Length: 333
Image 1: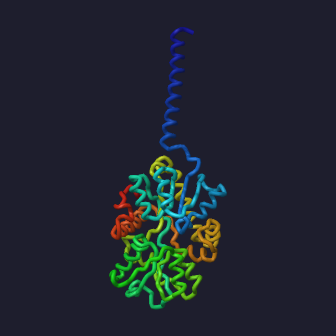
Image 2: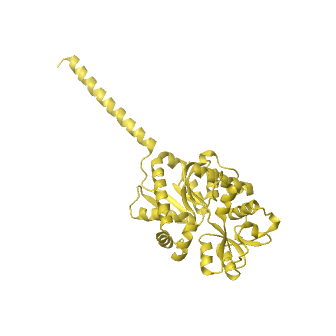
Image 3: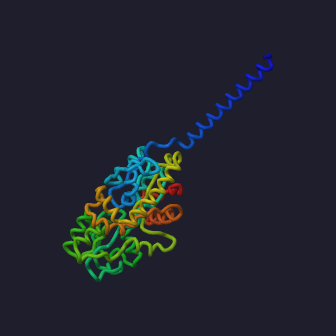
């Protein structure tokens, strides 16, 4: 073999080696852009209505029947979840809508809402047959929980939209929904604002009580076609996780939607899972409450329209409820 042949052969080897290195680099860079698949997606929710819609998904995840590995846990309050999201110790969280707005500000835009998981869960309960609409509350006392919080804001918005002024009614506060339910049990002529499943539990414990006003329906009538329903809970994702694992988030959304459809379509199965998860103590109550919780998986423009209208209403009552200001457009996925 002469020198020219040796040089040609050496050049070919170098070219092949260079191409291999370039290909390997491209693959590595591509992998970094997508992010390696997470071993497990860390998901937290609250022990209440916002967790009902994911019960089937939680059950399937435990059986290894989901597209990805999900690690589900429940908390008692949003205060437990917000610090975890701020520190990047969670990937996805199901939170009250206003808490999501607060979290957006705390993380300087570090989270996005991917769906609305629960619409209105508030109901006016009474045994007084004369109360059938908001206008019938003139001169009445309404018992509720959460002074200065979202239930009060929502109630005042609907009362105002129904033509009642602040002096036309009285609000009396109790510390827990169970206290309102106990008051109604002792005096069915009283009027109380209760969330699910407490509203259903109150009805089942006293046959004289009934739902006088579905607050979600009343809210929708006031909002009209441009607004949407009362938004109780939303699902948020850390923006960094979303950018690295968009396919995982999309897969979760599909499985979340399927789970909601299963629970809504079969409240009996949902009730058994709710009792097993410790969300509701009694299956009979859960079966009746689930259809009244407005479990959903609203995404896209419909989500943005309903959620932004809801947050604007809360801001009009007290901007502190949403972290001081409306979130930016990047809040909505």
